[in-house]
Image 1 (cartoon, one colour):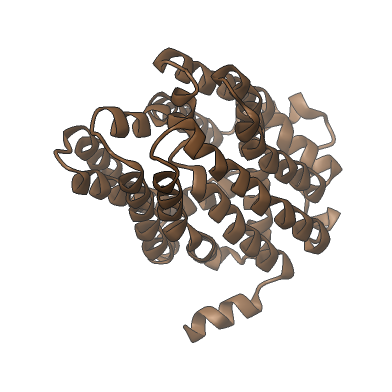
Image 2 (cartoon, rainbow, N blue to C red):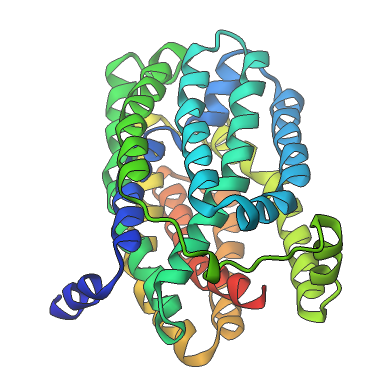
Length: 337
């Protein structure tokens, strides 16, 4: 514990501000994370329409991902980060104000823009705040601390939905309102306290976006990384929208089971983030990723075969191992670029 305190004291103000933001943002997100697909179905979407919403988000993601980094390099990380946080706060508001599934296109677009803008810039800010030899460990510490609310948020959400009558659009909607109310003051805090990186630290490319992008993408390691990202995006994009709907409609999970599934994932992720980050610093990023990857395959297998709610919860606990390794994944991504 003393080593953790010393580590946190040694970090910059930006690290502390982003960690505090992560605490509140994860609590807000944890309230709704298990219900987005279910809420969409409750508003009248069928499986094809549910998948089409994700496809729209993926299209936005594809168009904005590369230019975002270029704009951040030229106009400042903080400005773009704040823009991403504004969009992040508008996501739950958009869900709360929707009365049919077609209206969810707008918050889905905001979600994709947030994923493209906020999280990559947050990783850059964190990477700049950490020394190379401690970077994966630092990401793990950030992840462990900021994810603490995710232990309780899904269960709290389950209690609220159960108290309001069980899984339905009317019972889920208040979760989005509460999420919006949490994110607004966090946005103001970050705008007030976050410090912009000095221009000397930013990797500027003056030749123009397309020339810079082609130069970067032509590098051998970046090519390999792009292929991995494309394959991973296809796999996760084709399964993520349907997992919770599958758990509810096929495995008959109720709101409390969904809450315990989310909490199990987050507890495992929190407990293993720092150890896996340390392993990533010691034996290498690639070896660590390969070591943890089988947990994802076991998670999918248990989800499909689950005969009881307990196995559904175990399935998500295994998924938590993969989530904790995302810190090593992010570190490797930053270092390749």
